[in-house]
Image (cartoon, rainbow, N blue to C red; front, side, top):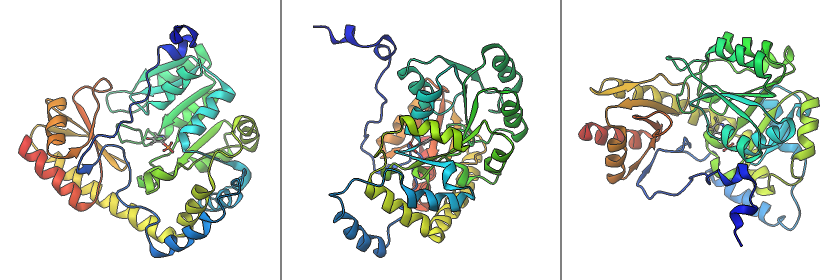
Length: 347
Ligand SMILES: *Cc1c(COP(=O)(O)O)cnc(C)c1O
């Protein structure tokens, strides 16, 4: 029996996402925070308490977590839905609304992968030479093909920049479908969140995640949208999609805002230092970042990627996405210093 023949054609041509673990001493490849958001003694004690309640299913509505996040973002809990990471919410959005799905490239790979997994048409428009949105390309495509969903990661992964506000707004105004502004990296940006624009634009949807601010292992993300959109998403959301430990630990983290804020501040100041150092190296072109990583270009990206790995430092190679480009996550001051020192040696 040939299993391949049983598989739907759109899945047959897909390849499993490469999230393999590469052994390394310093891990700067996945845009994680170098600091756990719940590392204190108090968390360890309450963790014990949560373990004893594991015979029960989690709260399907994640009521207290949603309430805390709503307060943090100044929206109402009816406008928030929780996901097992924001990846899951991207999946739910595409499952509910379908395609065509429009997004710029290069960007977060899951928009395209999930579209294909669900058999939906995808449309990709290259970013301009400043990694900003090609507004006229978007408007033309919106008029011609009427995409149901438009995904804009701002700050954009992997380029690090925010798209210009007026271009995003123009796209929101022109689109008859939903425009999803994925704000996974917004906490690291000096630019404004798009959440305030939701009042005026019902088709604007925001994605947030705890993954980049110290809780990647928990798998907790959020979609913020009009209540009518949330109701539709709830039809396809699996009832117990965020487990009870994740709900509890995430709630604790959101209550300890001081810790979250100071970790983010430290990462931002390290990003500025890293940027300055990289920009000063001969043979390196750096791009400004509003995120917790830096996108840069070197002469032989693959060679430098491999040389760094040999020295125990794992960053991300952008081969096939933006050839010759590399993406490095901001780590602890010590990790960043080691990265800079070894990169200098290699160059
Ligand atoms: C990392 C990332 C996410 C992620 O997601 P989780 O599933 O919440 O870990 C979403 N969008 C972008 C642009 C990302 O870079």
